[in-house]
Length: 541
Image 1 (cartoon, rainbow, N blue to C red):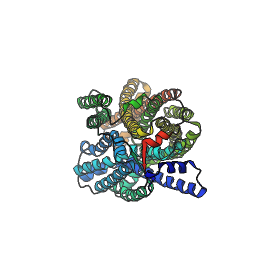
Image 2 (cartoon, helix red, strand yellow):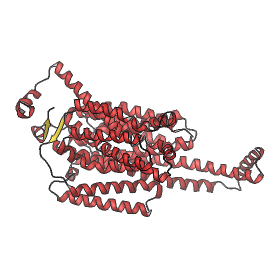
Image 3 (cartoon, helix red, strand yellow):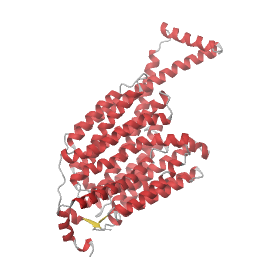
Image 4 (cartoon, rainbow, N blue to C red):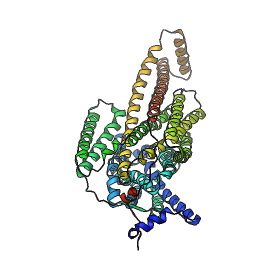
């Protein structure tokens, strides 16, 4: 007889202590299942950042401009973001293992097609295919982990899972830069193919199927309004750093996005079987953990986006060199993730989150002292310290919130949390980029005002520059122009550094706010219940 026909026997068997060989086999199976999940999610997240460095190369190969090539990046982020809300329904309806494997196959095929793209249009189309698979893997994977492991072991499991979330965005620019500079740029896509094939067989062999015992109707209205709303909102937010909040295109897309998402909320609160149960937000621990982790996403994405401006534009490093400086923070975060997960299983999330955010705040405060003479070793230390703090609090927070979600709504819970965090990350980049632009302009104006052309010291320095350019063979007029260009360039450099310092200080304040919110967290461990077993249908292989 099957496992489904003997539920009582299966329950009794699970309640008995496992013999050492059986326990060892179970741990090995769980480890391989985690490896299968981590591999897939790592590839999907990596592809959100790895393409950026290859953009100039693709522009040259396809003969397109910056605006046209942008859609290679934008299409992936919009499609993957728009698909997240529906993943909970798909997992419940068709089975989480099945949807994960289908997503993995689509992503792998999309990667192969991207590697073979012959034009910009074909690349955009293939990136959409890739995003359909990649966008579903993250929430589906989280849902599977919460079903695979009991509450007392989820911290360590989520810590291991978090390595892919934190490590992939940081290693992306380094790996991409090396591939583009020394190998074939198409490898940034085709490298996924053998890994995807390996992960397919590993997933087939090790993952168990999880499926809701109650079939729900597909919420067409919720899907249309959420996908349209998220896509247009993410696009509008993405244009803010380039065009500002008052730009007509930005306003139109943000208005459409907000209208659709408001409509989505109304629909979800009125239909009998919503795609996302917004009632989950009534859960105080889940909502508070989501708010804090969203603030953390603002901090993390802002840092990853803005610091390369200093390293490449000011310090003059190449993409590969910049990636190597950013790499130690990824390693520090990767080391802290499983440690934080194991500690969470023992002491809960509250203390870890507070300590982690205090460390993060201190690291950001130190980074706000960035100057032109700051050594790379110092920058690496600051970034690694921040990564330790982020690694200490990120996964415990998410696990604590999800532990309070009923097992039959875990799919919706992970979809909702991933959706909100993705919007938070996009908002963080847009907000901090625009703030950086405004502060840079302000500091440029202030520094220019301070330079009085009637100052004896300034006149002396400018005359020395003119003399230097004249000695190089320039005419008096050209030498004067070169000298003034140099002075203005120095003003710009110092204005950029001061603006970056302002941003790091602001993110330190955001980190303090998040730490204060952590004081209201309640460490409650999820209790096992027979009802949880009945709510989820576990299908044996």
